[in-house]
Length: 408
Image (cartoon, rainbow, N blue to C red; front, side, top):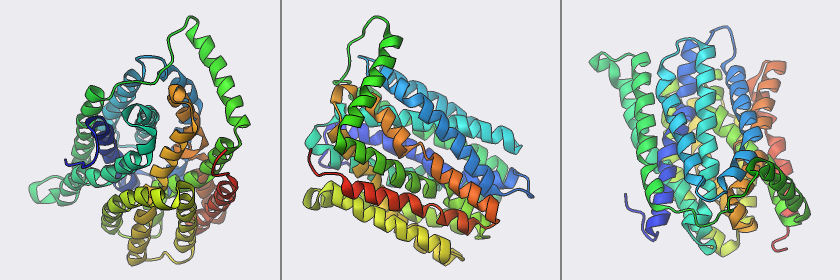
């Protein structure tokens, strides 16, 4: 896979995005559809899926600062990443086993926690894989190649699930094969990162490691509170990225609830990946010209418009396709630039500890968004009202980000 303009270490770091994105794509597009087929037909798929995602996010929010701090100790980053990746890949491969909704959701929560936990350590290794002046570029390439690379195993999964009938493979067996394909892809693209990226920023091992870790977390919280620029960025990020991940996690369930054909949903989300590939790289280049903060503000406004469109106008498959293309234009950019901007604001030797808090403040702790969608859908009986509730996250995120000073 050609990744022009990147060093061997940078390419190896980027390839982990290619590997884990296969599971992200499967969990966004096919897994909710599969879950709907085994769930109670009298219950709301949106509500059940939203609560499952909320539980997974809460577990991550509780664990990741502590584990991230331990990972910052010399020699620990790869061990934690491999442990989470390996457990997540096994759980992913086993998802085809349960035939009832509750066991399936429990196994999915485990695989989701492991996937997103591994991303904390992966994000923290950005400071080891490249230099600060290249954070935007390398981070953007990670998301870009993750989008396009994930399409390869996903298309293979689609061929087995949707076209398997021609050779006697029904949907249930097709999904079991798809889970195994995705897990194998994830493991294979982790190998270059393990082999070629060294932990160059770290804390030395100390006696009373657990006690010192908790003490260090307290110092980090105080440092974040004192740094106005970092504090405002993290608060803004908490709100707007929560909305972004809620859209990613709930889009297929929302489309299913509206009665849109599952094949149309899956193909539209596949188009999102292809649109997101050049858009993420372009966003990295535009940030060099216009500034990272300005490009993030543009993306937040775009997402607010996407939410309003989904709540008031999304009724058919054609409109879902329009929505998917619009999401693709901004999804990679807002994620990549948020990750790289945060890397510029933090001390490099404590990168994993800070990225643990980064995740609490939004990246994978999408607690509010999924909870809002589930609660408002349940109260009103209308999933459009649930989607509309996400708009408040982008409004608050925009206000806070606009207040963040360019330089301290």
